[in-house]
Length: 201
Image (cartoon, rainbow, N blue to C red; front, side, top):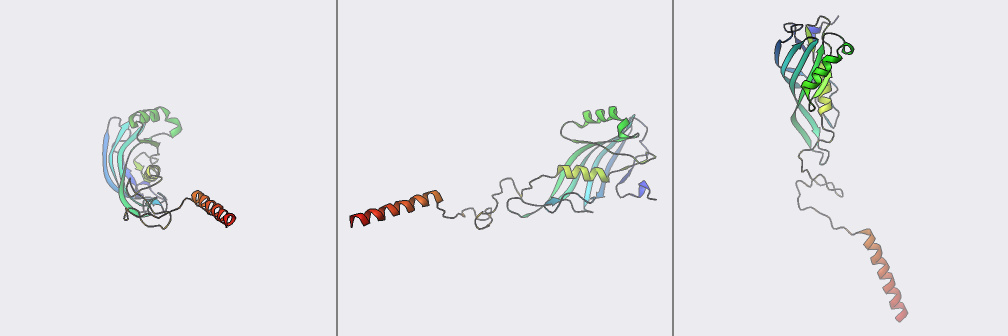
């Protein structure tokens, strides 16, 4: 039977659990769980994910306030170039001693502490309350934080819709195009002129 402490994402919190007012700092690196993103954008399984912050003990559980940083691999949605950059997100999560259904008041306290710009989630502690497992938290937080349309840069010009050339590298690139509506008028004008010449012949 798997033990909580054997998880690659386990953090020992026994020294602060059930001791309101106590704080445990965390500054550690964990392997990225599977399932973060897809072929367009995501975090490779096993990549180093850093977590810095603290567990604060309250009456009904532990509150984790932390900054998560992970290496994101993506493809620019405009020019299709590969992107590799670190992606950081702040998170506040609640680890209740009881089940989440019995901890609504504490969850409201977490919401107030977290504010509007941070994710707010509830995760279980191990049965004895001695370990917090961050696997699900890392996956959930990073998946929610990934941009839907990653760009290599904000002003990326993308690819030419006609020939596919990278417009970032060829700033003066363009094609001579004729508006089809004007082309039809030109054909009609030529036809009328031809008929006029035939009548005058």
